[in-house]
Length: 281
Image (cartoon, rainbow, N blue to C red; front, side):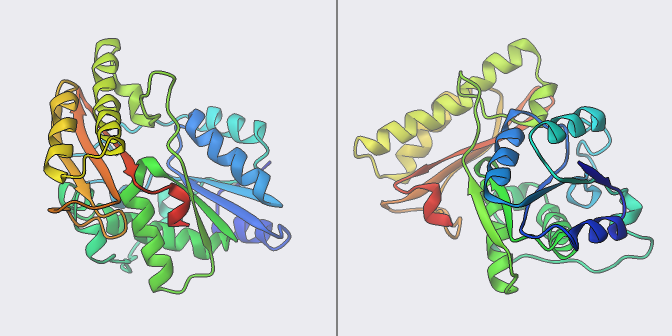
């Protein structure tokens, strides 16, 4: 596996790489990341994974400086699953002194995480657009766990006519249902036990929907009644899966998403109702 630390090095690798699958990450890789890389390897002639903790998507009081980092372990994992290249740029390489250009996404980015974390999706949209320009992938892989991020990136690709196919990938969970996340490393044993209430609440609402419940308010209350035992809920949303606008009337498809503070970890999760992830492809 080739490790590239500059744009010039990555572009030199890219010229000979052929059909490229790309997976942008912030490192601290876990089994969920591994599954996405393995899928990309199956689909592609060559796979590039970026590792970059992007400061412009963190707010002033968020965990940029303490975000988990283990480059050596990350590179071992990527080499072990067949990635052809790892792009590991410095902050200065991605955001050189004086850089001013930003990609500002539209309304879909203003809700939920966008409302809770002002500026977050501008940082995400800018760095992903830049990575697409550097890597020039055929396909790029994004996980369902960050559902709003997935929809924001899909919208940007559509609106800017980017020549890349976005491949949505299902959330990877531990056997007990907890969605895998780099921030799970922050959890104590007791906090992790309580965090299971997040997926339990979402699954309970999914079961209710399968049994015929369509009222968004009742679905929201089902989630809140269980997930609130995990910690401090920031939001529970029952929204249109395409626009992320909150539903106020029964609908035949929805995404239920939440954010919760569990100890010092801020965890997000979601489930799709009435549709498959493939419907977003």
